[in-house]
Image (cartoon, rainbow, N blue to C red; front, side):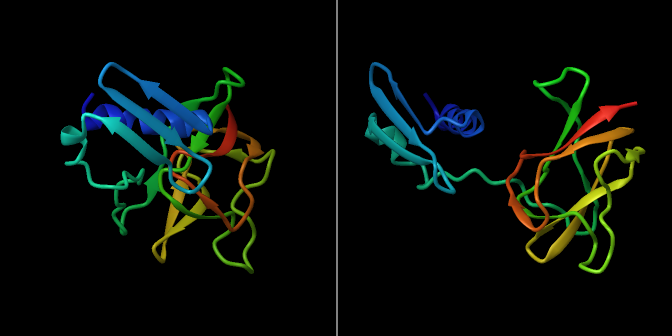
Length: 161
């Protein structure tokens, strides 16, 4: 098992929502615990291979170019086959409006077109507009205003038109 396999396992466990996963193979034992901001990893066995791994392994989104608007590709939701879930492309703070005195970008029931701004996510003092890549109707807004969001966290459910 190499570092890429371990990183893929960490990502899988983080997405699954499991609190703790233990994996024991012939010559290696891995325990991944979640529940805090970052997964904790305990390993035993093949110490000489794992000593080259920088500790701790962290799941982070790649850096975002500040000048380019950020958009997320639609992903089909497992709850409803015809609904599309828009997920966060970055880690940051989710805002439903451009400024405190401005109206929300969208509301449940609004019809949106491809390229419409759905929200902004603040990351490192930069406000990244999240644009829709599909046309449709907003079915559900999954995140509260001014809440922190993680990479790949579902933000909106859209009924495509």
